[in-house]
Image (cartoon, rainbow, N blue to C red; front, side):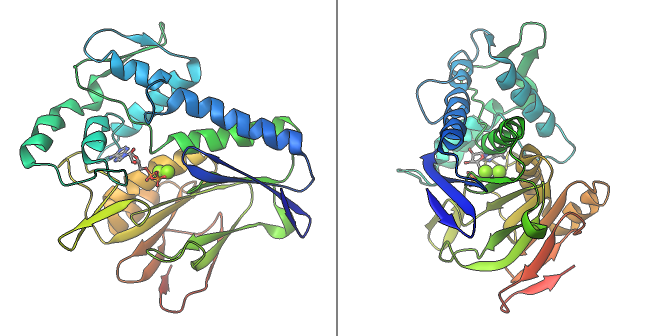
Length: 318
Ligand code: ADP
Ligand code: MG
Ligand code: MG
C-alpha cells in the first residue's frame, strides 16, 4: 500500500502487468477482493495458459461446441458482433495469427508468406458459432482459436468498477495497464497521463481529466519487434495477416465502459484519423485521442474529458 494526499494505492501483478487500485480510504480487505476478482476473470479468459474456458473452446475447434459460463458467452458474443461491424479490423478469431507471430513474446519473427496465407482462412469470425440457449461456443474448423487479448482487460475493468460501486465506493480508480476505469470525481476529476510513444514509461505527452469514465490506450510502442528497420507491432490486420501499418502511434478512447474503449481503440486504429473521426461524429459517447508519427495529437471531440498538453514537441489539433 502507498499513500499520497489522502489517496491510498494498492498494487499487484496480474495478467502480465502491474495493476494499480486507488481508493480514498484505507481498505486492504477490499483491495484483496478486487485483486481476487481480477484473477478469477483472468482464469476464465486467458489464452496464455494451458487451461481456461476460452482454451477449452479452442481445444474443441472443429470437434464440438463447449458450454461456457454466462459472462464468457456474453463477452464472446460482443466480440463477435464487433468483428462484424462494417470495416472492422477487430477480429475475435485472430488467434492463429497472433500465436504464429508471437509479437512481444520469446521467438517472435516474420513468418513465411505461405504460413500467413494458410492461417488466414482459420480466422473468420462468422465461423465462431454461438448457441444462445445452450450458452455454447463452437469453432467450426480445426485450427481456429479465439483471442480475447484486446478486450479482456476492458471487460474486467468494468467488472471491478461494478464491484466497487456495489461495495458503496464512491471514488476509486483501477489501472490494468492500458485500461483505466474510474469511479466518481475527486476534486473535479481523475488525472490520467497520456504516454509519450517509445519513451520512458513516466514521460507524458499530456494529461486527460475524467470523472466516471474509462480511458483506454492502445499503443504500437507497447509490444513490438524490429527487423531490418521495420517495426512489427501487436495489432494484426485480419485482411492481410500482417501487423497493421499506419501513421498512428497510439489511440486512446474515453468512454463509459472500458470494454467499449478496448473495442474502439482497435476499430479506430484500423480506420485511421480521418475515417475514425467521421465514424465517431455519430457516437458522442465514444471519443478518441490520436497520437501520430508526425507528432500531432488529434482529438475527435472532447465533451467527456479535459486534455492538457505537456510536451511542446507535439501539436494539439482539436
Ligand atoms: P495491449 O495488450 O497492449 O493492451 P491491445 O489492447 O491493443 O494491447 O490488444 C492487443 C492484443 O489483441 C494482441 O496482443 C492480440 O492478443 C489481440 N489482437 C491482435 N490483433 C487483433 C485484432 N485484429 N482483433 C482483435 N484482437 C487482436
Ligand atoms: Mg489492451
Ligand atoms: Mg485494447
